[in-house]
Length: 438
Image 1 (cartoon, rainbow, N blue to C red):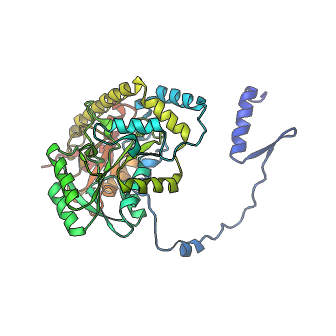
Image 2: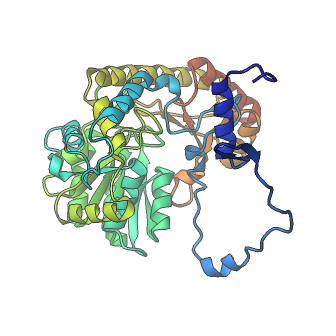
Image 3: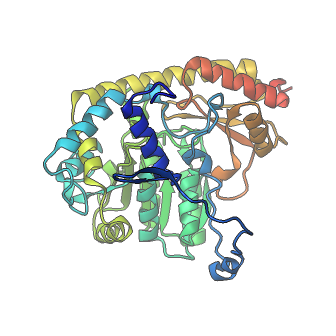
């Protein structure tokens, strides 16, 4: 205290941090002591594990950037699938978590499928005709919902149809489960129904993973006239549709797209959603809505995987979404995302005229097509060295990409000024993109 001019509370906190890191040990009545260091020596030989693990590599290359923070403070992030703190309802989150912690039932075991109130809210939020609370299973975020749904309906070694491009986390989950992923092309109006029917006929697949609303990475919304066609194609193939609606809260005009689930009379659609994108990366609360025998299988998988989602987190989520502040937040978030999308769409032609794009009507991303022959992986690497993180397009494709792309995320930067600065850094890192196409 004398040496550093700090209070006893600060010293106590510092000692607790050091003890937590294993650098000191505290002994009541005796004091705090530096831990003994382990003797040095050669690193342990772990080569035996190569034989024990066998030929089943597991890779998170396509989603590691999405999960890990950027590290350096001066790096501009145009790659994350989560909102910047400036877009989060931080005050409402703090209040919700505090209220949940004070609940008398906070640390009781919740029902395996989730709290009744939270299940009812997800059923209502999906819209009329989308199911009832008994059809809802609470999950620890959208990624867990994807993994469980894929394993529920596609056995290892068999085929899953997926939009091309699509969310890399779904591709990684499928490959980890031993599932073959086959592409179905997407255009500016969503998946092409004729090509979907052809893929079902050619492969015999029994499931199709899709994002009809604010598709990641393209931002497209499935056109109204294609919705019934997609459902009819799946019905003819006797196949499931796994509808990932994690971005449904990210409409730029305040009118979320109607889910396919609402038009599904026979339990064909397995519906996935999450609060994470609209609230916070650490609000790991999502839901599956499913009907019929597949719902029982999904409940069993979720119990085996995690038993249940932590009750305090469910209580906090329920508190958050049932207060009037939640609807205000969604309106504000949509407006902020709209303004950011317009800012990027305005600056791209001036700073990177060789890049093609279609401005999205919702979501967090702009899908930028690069000139033929450009190396998106090399451009992303050079951009990181220049202080801006972008994602190359290759990990978003189940097979060979038809053209090079970058996914430019406008939700993770601190401000519109940061977005422009990030694009300027990208232009310096990739001068070939600054020359207009002839």
